[in-house]
Image (tube, rainbow, N blue to C red; front, side, top):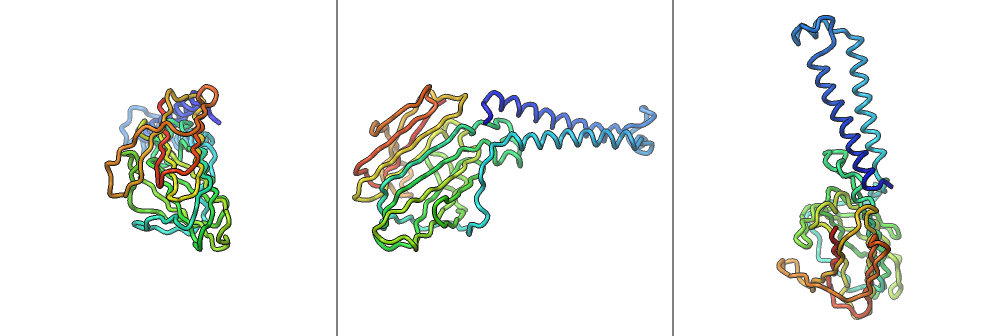
Length: 308
């Protein structure tokens, strides 16, 4: 995996090569090789030396192609959304209902180590859309209390792209056309992931494991947070989150806020500081673990914030 300093050097070099190639290509078109350098543009093309022109054109195209290939090699390898998922595009989805379920355990691992691996590539319109990935591994142990054939979760990002994969159950996806908002940050890409529970007997536990890749989603201070939620239930529940930070960017501060249950229409609900739960900081603040267990307030949002 690329460290932060090497990532900058590699990105600067590749972009410089591509920029040089583009300038050289334009100069080659404007001043094509000819035996008489004093000729005008039109006359130059009439007396063009084909051999030198083709060789120089091949050289510049080879340089640009090599830089693009190296840019691809500099990418962190991630797994995209499976193409066999049944995917729908909808304007909105019904309010999620978790009353048929009790969440025993909800664990999140947020790996930010590659979230700054391509600091300049993100500015390229096509190549950069899937750069600087951060990965969420969300594992949930859930008890099925009564008959329900499906369970759904929404995953959103303020970044450029989002990949969602279901690792434990058969799933389908719905892409939402409407934006969402969390902590005053607009979520531009929103997916609803629905798992098939028709084979899960009532009264038994099942595990749902979801892997999500967020691209260019942790670029600005207002994006440096992760949310997890308690369920509305009478049973005890355990929430936990592990944050793994970039190797060369250690957070100066990590804190937690909470937001009480509210409807989508209540936009002005203020988050307040939260001191509860078990907190463990890793060596040199490179990771942070938080866990909260017991009879938790219903539909409570817990926001893990960090500052570099």
